[in-house]
Every structure is written in C-alpha cells, then in structure tokens.
Length: 496
Ligand SMILES: NC(=O)C1=CN([C@@H]2O[C@H](COP(=O)(O)OP(=O)(O)OC[C@H]3O[C@@H](n4cnc5c(N)ncnc54)[C@H](OP(=O)(O)O)[C@@H]3O)[C@@H](O)[C@H]2O)C=CC1
Ligand SMILES: CC(=O)C(=O)O
Ligand SMILES: [Mg+2]
Image 1 (cartoon, rainbow, N blue to C red):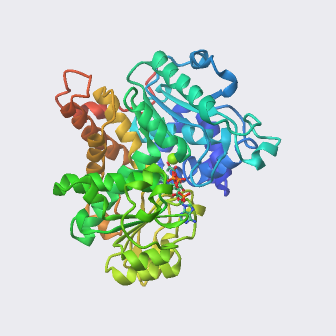
Image 2: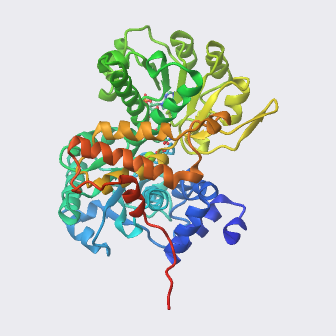
Image 3: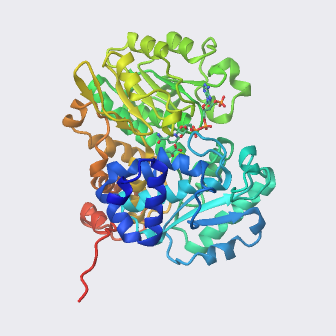
C-alpha cells in the first residue's frame, strides 16, 4: 500500500497493482480485500476505463485469453492452452461497448480481468477458477486501428454470420471444455449483440449478462432501499430513464417484474410506470415501428418529447435514472425541474466511468438543495451541503455479480432464473441499514462487501434450490456458513 499510495496518478496505481497481481497473486488479493474502498476505483471504474483506453501503451504482461477471428475452427484448442483445467467463471467481452467509452476492441481485456479480480476479492471465487476472455473480431475505432501500440487485429469488426459462427464455436467449446456448470458472464458487448447472445444461450448454457441483468439487480436493490426514505411502494413511483439500451431497459424490465410480483398486476401494466428517453427523445408508441425490440415494451401512448428536459416536464417522474453513457446530461435545469416536483428526488447517474456520469454527486445535492437520494455508477467523494455531509451510494453491478456467481456455484445451479435475480436485489436492499440511510447511502458500504456477497449468494442459492435448478445435493443444512466456508481467502499458510 505504501508503494501504491506513492503514485499520484491513478493509472500508475493501476499499473503497480496489476503487476502485483502478476507477481504475487495472494498478496494482490490480500491488499485488495483489506483496502477495498481505496482500491476499487483503481482496479475497477473509473481507472480501468483509462487503462483500457491506453492498454496497448501500458501493456507489460498478457492477462487472460484472447481468441481472435484467426482462430476460427480452433477455439477448442485455444481453450486447451489455458493452463488451468478447473474453470468455474468466465467473463467474456468483444470490446465493442467498454463502459461508456465505446469500442476499444481488444483493449477491452482490462474489463474481464478487472471483473474477475472482483469475483475473487468480493465474492470469494478462487482466482485459478476464473478465466478472462476477449474475443477479437476487429474494431471500428479508427484511432486504435492507427495506433502502433494497438494489441488487436487491425481490421474493422466482422458482423453477421462470421461473428455469430465464431461466438457459437466459442460457446460450444466452453461447454465441452469446462462442462455444464461453468458460469459465462457476457460483459460490455454492444447492445445489438448483447440481447441476442443472452436470448440465444440462456436456454443451453449458464449465462449472465452483467450489463443487462447485473445492472438491473443493483439498481432495483438501490431503489428498494431508497423507498425506505421516500416512503410508498415501487408501484407508487414513475420512472424516467435517460438511455434506453442494455442498462436502461434491463433495469426497466426488472422493476416491472418486481412491481408485478408485489402487486399481482401484469408485466404490461407494470411497464406503464416506466418511461425511456433515447438519443431521439422520449420513447413513445408512434415511434414503435423503428424502435429496437428491447425498447418496444416501454413505448407508451404519449406525445413525443425531443429531449430529457421536456420529458421531465411532461412525465413528471419521481425517479430519474441515467444509463446513457453520456456525461453531464443531467443539467442544472433538468435536476432543478425534477426536484421541483419531488420532496425526495431519487437520482441515479449510473453511467461509467466518472467522465460519463450524467451528473456529479455535488451537482445532484446542490441543485436539489440537499434533498436528493443520489447514487452513481462510479464513486464520488462525500459532499457537504449547508453543513450536512452526504455519502453517495455506488450503484454498480460490482455489488451483485460476485454474490450471484458465488450463489450459483454454491448451489450448482445450471441455469440463471429471473427469480434468482430478484432474490439478489431484495437481499442487497435488506442489507441497507438505517445508519446508512441517515448518511444518504442507499447501498451498504463496500467495506462489508464479502459479507454482503455471502448473503446475496445465500439468497440466490436458496432460490435455485426452490426452483429445482440446484444440482449440489443434498442442500447444505446451513447455506450461509457453507457459502462463507467456500470463499477464497488469501491467508498465508504456516510453514514448518
Ligand atoms: N452502474 C453500472 O453498474 C453500470 C453502468 N453502465 C453504464 O451505462 C451506460 C450505458 O450502457 P448500455 O446501456 O450498455 O449502453 P447502450 O449503448 O446499450 O445504451 C445507451 C443508450 O443511451 C442512449 N443515448 C446515447 N446518447 C444519448 C443522448 N445524448 N441522449 C439521450 N440518450 C442517449 C442510446 O440511445 P439510442 O438507443 O438512440 O442510440 C441508448 O439507448 C454506460 O456508460 C455504462 O458504463 C452499464 C452497465 C452497468
Ligand atoms: C459497470 C459496468 O458493467 C459497466 O459500466 O459496463
Ligand atoms: Mg459492463
């Protein structure tokens, strides 16, 4: 920590800690677990975003497994080259939508590597059982294609059948190599592939899309906790999203599912509470024919609004969520207008990294005159407004995927089910205590993340047993102590 703290530049800290991961894995995890709040912004958002942008230039050692178009027909052999034979979790990207930074091609590898470091540090999955993979199908990022340090294929992205065939070969090879129970987490695919891959493989593989499902769970958990302050139920609220992609529609569907479970209303009716704004304005019925399929469920009868401000005025939401990937879009006028209708305005600016956050914590608290319940995807420091200090929550799927993954492995679940995701969200919300809410926090502090993950794992595993999806039989008598006993801990052994 002395060495890492000696660097002022976050990217230098990143380089230092990733080289520690290479040099002494156990020490890396010991340091990361013991200083999680300080180091999460280094190994994860926002610094991992900058690291991916400069990945070629700062490259020292390869991490993870690259599978490129050139390996078509040989993907099985590629996987066999990975030295570990017992793999339980794979995080895979094709680098096309890295955080809110766009197409970073092969340099997106920083994301699977970072996510899996969190699987181990926060969720206790053994590092040797974690496999980061980047599928290199080219990049449409012209700057990278011209960059002498770019580490990937120098060609534009392949699409269509060639892309689908490579991904299919990969999915089949994974199952053949590691079996039915390996968890495959799709990460930072562009939405035109993300929804398709999830729909295609969720019936045959144990798959989880972190950007659609993980984000949905963390947002729902944070909202359920926020209700303890705003009062009322989820169904009493009106939700407006800026951003109608993976994160926005994923959260929208999860909220609708929870409302439907709580009230018994149909999903269709529950979705009527949820409104989306995309780059063309409010998503409304008259646009339906030209909308991507994932937006269509939220295209309600209403006049069009060309931008967020006019949508806020027209819809009068009680909860405002940013999932656009575009920074500074919650302007002073937007927040002041939104706050003028709400005593306790709930503002989630979920886009990453910090540069893409829809607003800062300071802006949210100041422009709402200290009334906002605020959370962001990337961390912000506490803010003091008129003598009161607010601690912003970090609404990031890092709260969720390590616990869900652990729950799946503990129960031996062979498929992911929406009810397991709802159970994770409720568990997260239940771990937010009054003392956290009093500070403005609608998430439990990251400091306790291993306990939080263990509790989420139990909720997920319980649901898997209930649904008949668990294969670890008989069910352990005490799931919590079993889940905790299975968590990797970077302890040094005694040598004689
Ligand atoms: N906090 C967390 O845990 C997570 C955060 N995220 C963040 O969410 C962001 C979005 O990710 P994702 O949903 O996967 O991305 P997508 O590309 O799937 O969706 C982005 C959406 O934002 C819309 N959009 C883009 N620019 C504007 C604009 N200027 N005004 C209004 N809408 C706009 C797009 O509109 P159109 O459809 O018209 O193109 C699209 O609907 C990223 O920054 C990502 O880092 C993602 C996952 C987890
Ligand atoms: C957190 C995350 O998964 C994202 O921003 O894409
Ligand atoms: Mg992601």
